[in-house]
Image (cartoon, rainbow, N blue to C red; front, side):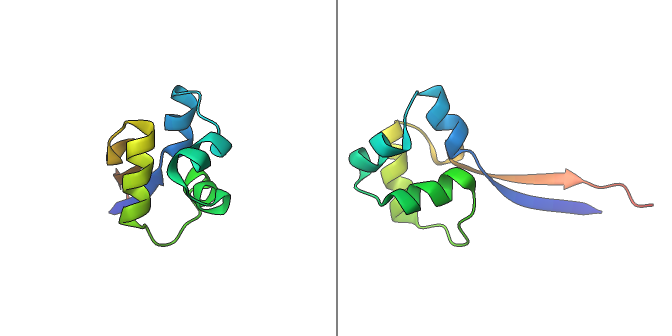
Length: 76
């Protein structure tokens, strides 16, 4: 049986670059609430424009912000 999920990695990417949410807001022009949603992984719909702004500001790839994971679950 397989399980799959989308994982947000913005927090880790920002930490590696010592980037604050406030600074990322200034660089991207995005609202703090938008950054917070990606940071906490609470958003329900991914916006490609937002992803492109985050990638540009952080000089990273989409995979550094959001990833797809498949996990093998053993059946009982």
